[in-house]
Structure formats: structure tokens, C-alpha cells
Amino acid sequence: MADTVEQAKRKAAEQAVKEHFDPEARYVGIGSGTTILYVVDAIKAASTNQNIKFVPTGYQSKQAVLAAGLTPIDFDSLPTNQVLDVAFDGADEVDEDLNCVKGGGACLFQEKLVAERAKKFVCVADYRKDQSRLLTKWPAIPIEVAPLARYTVIAALKALGSSNPVVRDDYMAKAGPIRTEQYFFIIDAPFPTLLTTGDAAKDPNGGDGTDGKWEVGKLSRAIKKITGVLEVGLFCGMDGVEATRAGLTGGQKPVAVYFGLQDGSVKVRTTRKDEAA
Ligand SMILES: O=C(CO)[C@H](O)[C@H](O)COP(=O)(O)O
Image 1 (cartoon, helix red, strand yellow):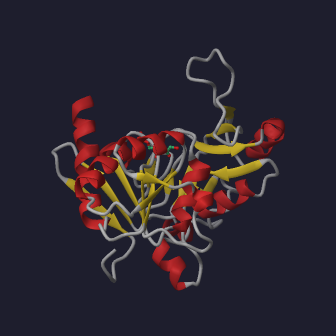
Image 2 (cartoon, rainbow, N blue to C red; image 1 turned 90 degrees about the horizontal axis):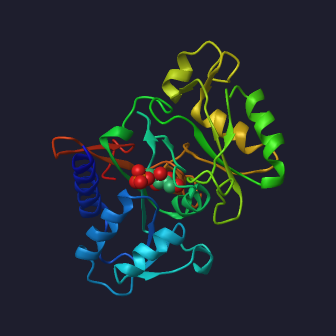
């Protein structure tokens, strides 16, 4: 099982890099987690250009870039208005619209900053992450919050319909809550039903949460409005190509997701039917 999952991650990473990493790129975003390590390996193998700068989404990501002999650059050192040619990252779950839950590794804030700076954001995952709706297998939405506001945020999340939002503990459950790289907390908030945009159009209440069913984008915006929330681990809305067309810097949604499957093949899902991603 473990070998099958690792092989699925590696195959997906290799194909995503083959199809989206341009050795002439100038700036490339590198996300967090275990799958991204295979992306870094594949980039290292394909990279012939020492001038590419890699923008990591946190400490672990930066160490992976350095260990591969590639050149990291901090997000806030990027020249103003400099977009990334591409950003790669993992995901905790992906729905059929390519909305993602992220933040399993508590890096969602920097991951969103980097994804939104990229002309195209490409996700790489194994078969367990591929679901028609979010929160099918992944239990909760990770939300980064100011520690002082944790109780008010929990109360507000309950009012939005979250059954049991909890502050994420240190994995040893000894040292109290985990701290993000911004020194904030993560609240994991389960919700009963998350709808894709298509599903929401058929819902009598349009996925506004009144019947316990939330359209992903509506829920993301409602959570983001709570005072004390830094960022929400829902990556949805426009993809980078749509955002660029709208004159924005970038979107949150991937243009393509590469799922490594159990049989060693790779399934690619893309938002862009009309053109090469
Ligand atoms: O969002 C993330 C970290 O905040 C990761 O990208 C996500 O948890 C996927 O990790 P993995 O590749 O280990 O399954």
C-alpha cells in the first residue's frame, strides 16, 4: 500500500513536470508536503538552467529546494508584479471542478500566496485525493487563525454549520497547538456537504449554507470574512489563465491536477478544455 501510494505520487510528479516545467522558466513556485518532493526530484533531473529561481511555500519546501541544489528565493523578495511561470503543489483533496482542500501540512497561507502569483498552478496528488466533492474522505477544512481569536472563530464556524471545529494539536499532543510559520494556529473545521458550482446551481438554496450545503467558493468567502482568520484552506474560484485574462495576477485553482493511480498510470484533469494548459 505505502509503496503503491509513493509510486503514484512519483509518477504523477514526473508527468506534471514533463508537461509544465519549462527549463527556460525564470520563477517557479514549489509547494509543501510529501508529493512535492517528487516534483523537486523531477525538476532537478530536467533542469539545465541555473538561473531559475524557486519560490518555496515554507521551511520544508525551501529545504527541499536547497537539498536539490536549486536556488530558492523568498516570496517577499520577488520583484513587484513579477509573476511565477508555474507553481507546483500537492493537495489534500480535489473535487470534479478542481477546487482543492489544502493545509494538511499547515502551510496553506504561503501556498495560496504562491499559487495566486503563478500564471498557472499545477497540482500533483495520488489517487486517494481524487473525489467528486470536497470533504468526502478528507475530514475538515484547515483554517489559519490568530491565536487570540480562536474561540470567536470557532463560534463563528459553528454558526456557519461546522459540526466540530478544533484547534489542531501538536502531533505528539504534548506541546499544545501547532504553530504555523506565521506563528498562528490551525483550526480544522468539518462541514457536512460541500457543493461544486454545478451542484450548487441545482440546490434550492444555491449552496448558501442554509440547508447545510455550501458551494465551495461561498463557504470560502464566508470563512474569510471572520475576524481572526488569516486564510482558508479552500483553493477555488478562478484558475491562473482565467485570472490573467481578467487582468488579475493569478487564481487559486489549479489549471491541471495530475493524479497518480494504483496501476502506475496517471490521470490528468484540467480546467482548460479550449487550449493546452
Ligand atoms: O497543503 C499542503 C500542506 O499545507 C500539502 O500540499 C498537502 O497536505 C498535500 O500533502 P502530501 O503531498 O504530503 O499529501
